[in-house]
Image 1 (cartoon, rainbow, N blue to C red):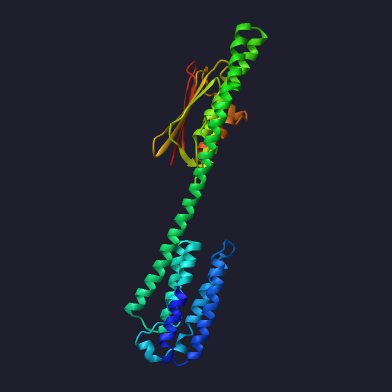
Image 2 (image 1 turned 90 degrees about the vertical axis):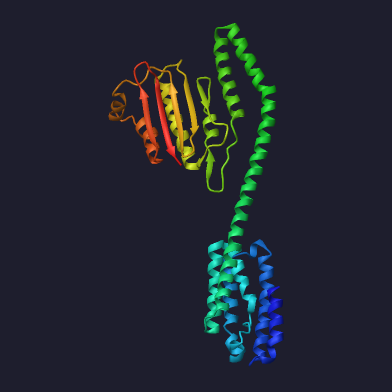
Length: 351
């Protein structure tokens, strides 16, 4: 469309050009280049930075021939340059491919070429530069938004499909495997002896399987954020209860990984030191500007000075796996414990 406008402009003013043959030669090159760019931009393989850069160079190069084609009188009466609005295409293409900054810079480059060829600054010239840069910027912004929306839509569709499949499997598991495990647990307790041990194991697997089925599917965003809830929900066992909000708790994916590792280390300490009958509770709270994660158990607690002694002996589980990770996240860690009082770790991470 811009080429047809340039063709009409050349036809109207060709009689006043000082070198009409050069004008039509430029129009012929513009026609050939338009065919190439239309074909290139219509295919994904042709949308490459070098094509856009070449488009900008060709447009500015052909525009620079205007002083050889047009007469001083035509410049005086503000007759359009030989490329006219055809030269705006590279700015739009740069915005579509590279975003608003690339589009704005390309538009400014074309506007600068217009100024250098006219050799004088005017209100019309400033308006053209603003329109060129603005068009490239706006198209770039729309293009970036469209790409992000497409990514988000694709992620949402995948999450919806994963949730539907999870629900289908949950129904099948509930009607089959979970009922069998519940039957084994109940019958084993009734029989006692070795069957009671099998009942205990079946009960643990039943709880673990229920937690896996009930856990929300993992989600991530285009910005690299992820939901913390699924990583914690999978840690539930007969001895560990996990409570999370009903809504997503989105944090950077690295933060989610590190917080899940902190909780696993805390639960590992409960298993090793709190006794075989100790229970643990994991609570996640989303307070808006910060996320609070607590791990509490009903074990015997940590005697005063025990952590310092463990670090001196080279056992760095708490120092590195818990405290070190929280410090790396620029969060805060608080320990509440005492003989016979159990242990509670509270982690606060700010968004």
